[in-house]
Amino acid sequence: MAHGPYEHLRDVVLAGHSYGGMVITGVGDRIPDRVSTLVYLDAFLPEDGQSLFDINIPANTQRFLAQAGDIGGLAVPPPPAAYFNVNKDDAVRVDAMATPFPIGALTERLKLSGAHRNIRKHVYVHATVLPRESPFKPFYDRVKNDAAWSTYALACGHDVMLDLPDRTTEILESAI
Image 1 (tube, one colour):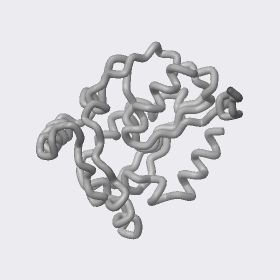
Image 2: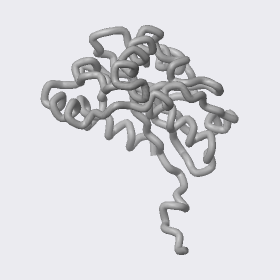
Image 3: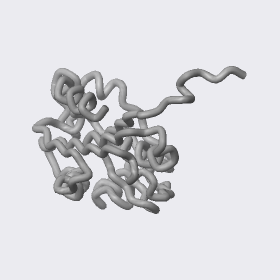
């Protein structure tokens, strides 16, 4: 079987938004030699052995569990766009495209070797305009004064790529 060029990627910039921080951390930990940068777009920043429920705001975890029970227990219904302060021009599209999220993904603990810390660049983008306490601010606060990280605080809602697409693009391009 022939292999495509995608299997030989190097110097990859992985960007993860929200829950995607869990994903890029795990991927970066498994293949750090192929990744040049991890970019967290208002995202969770886990440590070894943590699940999303371990690092989310406890009230959010309780709400997710209650909502999952309301629809059979296997998934969490998506919050409305307004929950994350999505701009009004994109809110209808976000609500239409959002789908339930498997509860197992929220409870599974990451097993990390620490290899993701050896990736050359780490970037954290924090959205500062939310209608409630941000579950992402503690991660931004943890790395904002760390010389190994480039950090940005953007005056927008959680979906930074929708609210500030040009600025998000600039940040991603600077991560190369």
